[in-house]
Length: 546
Image (cartoon, rainbow, N blue to C red):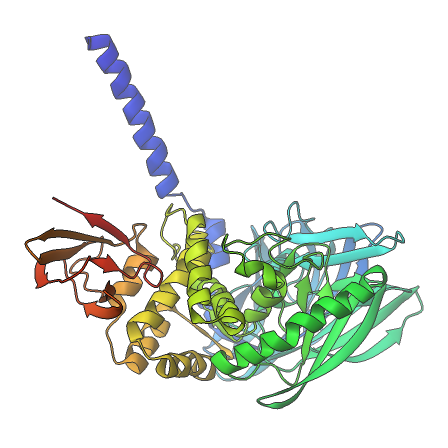
């Protein structure tokens, strides 16, 4: 290779390395920190109650209204931050009848009180606002409002904002760490349409301006991306389920053209789902508020007690099986998956969106438990192994903290297989069931972190599984079990990114299972049959070396 070619190759390599570095180390801005970090201007107050009161002008795609913030000061404060996207106007902020000065910086709003508010004091202020909210380009993956129509040409509107931010359409303390204790959601819609939001419908009010206000009350803590509106000429039908905590109301709101399909599809999926998930995870977390499924103009979203449904009344994921095994075509993916989030995501919520694997990994794992309830434990394991084909290993599952950024989409497929691997390691289904139920009981109705979840599972399992969690959550690689066989002996070791990785693994020895405990150092054992690790229940790579 001549000097000119070598120089060109060097330039290309530098460019490639630079491009790779940019992908692996994104640059975050002050706007990201304002949105993602729990600063003293946010941690100094704890939200107790919201009253969100919003008019939706569908024709002009315009919203206007107010939100009451009732809070307890957790420290002395004279200034605080709430959040509202900068494309929406803050009309005024009222405190004890007085307009407060405010300053806007990106999507953050800072207000100053006339006097210092003392720690433990209970106070409130009201934000009035208006504007054209973001219209979702590809809901629910790219958030915002979805404006559509039913077959009769009547408006059909929904909102989805996970990750994107609830502050894209209403003023709020937009950080997952602080769930409001309870909430009133008042949505005014044009006469002839209905709004369905979270919780219980308290009342409806006929207004004098061609609008009707629907007042919904949420009696449990709720994460603010779960707060929702669904507007259409809905038909309502209902059922009930006798669950662990008594009678659970089931309410369904669907477009008129979907009524018969909905009765069939919801009837076939909802009660079996509740039976399986209550058995494994504990009682449905929101009995007082009930369970709702609502026709939505997008695929779906886990809005608490008001699950958005848009799977076109098909089994599978829009008629396909994500696992490729055939098991996923026996049930409606969106009903099972999004309802699974009532336990993992809505009941147990991560403080930072970087830990969203807690929501998605456990919920996708719940799909395997549902398959298991239909076709047996082996089928459930095969389903979860089948979704591994979608793992990209592009970046860690845990994202960077304090900048409102998720980790890899592998939080679904790889996260589910991590959870299933943990079950296999614990090797005691009654203990495993008690861990899952305990998580929902002890960490439910509050926010949590990866560290708390790992500590909880380690303690209840009586095993230190931290290195296993770290390998799958904090690194991109799948652990490699290397082995070599000679003279009736087999030697084996782990190759991994976690130092001193020591995850136990099950191998098949003839017709029996046998446990081995590899480390990063070679170990040797006698083996009468082939060395066959249990790849159906462990998400690992096996490599024979000479």
